[in-house]
Image 1 (cartoon, rainbow, N blue to C red):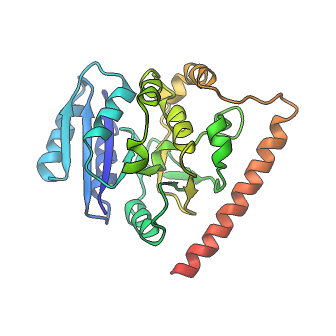
Image 2 (cartoon, rainbow, N blue to C red):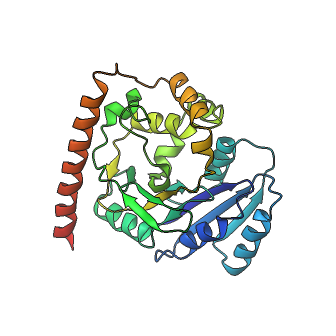
Image 3 (cartoon, helix red, strand yellow):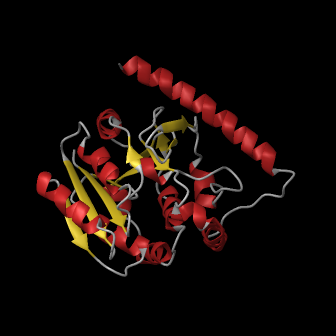
Length: 266
């Protein structure tokens, strides 16, 4: 089983070395790591190139002035792995991420799309919290319930999906993703949910690194504008807290059940 991870970077030198180490340090050895420099001027390309000299599993490309999601889809198109994912240039995997995913997929061969519990690191690289979000309804993902103002985002940093699921995307779906500047992930998850359920492992696999200059935080209003255009569901305010409460209760219950099941596998 081979993993292909893609990182697209534009002036991410501050955190890129740690991101690279979080991939190259995985205990799963069959990894292909594709890093795409989008025209950095801060030394990001040199950081990636130096890492590639030390680790033959890393491949570095230069594609300046290309949008984030066009860059990511191009990288995923080049990938040779059975299991695909992408990691932003300031985010991190846990050391056990890929080996855990590999073990689960070997036991559950029909799984096409899975994630872990959402984690969050701070600027110093400390894991600050993990959310027990174990329940993600395929129907609600497809309908667009998962965003900031309803059931919460689906965390991209711990998503893994099969090559088959990715290559099933239509030309129209790909255009909808690459037309986004910020919310291409939201559009991608909706497309995946039309074909597959999202399974969740009861552990942190990867996480968002919050450091104050995150593009997704700084540009949240623009992100949410794209989410609205992509067909997100927004419930009236009186109904929203109840939906969130039910979702959190189901998530905690599902995470607990999965933890018990995983414990029986050990």
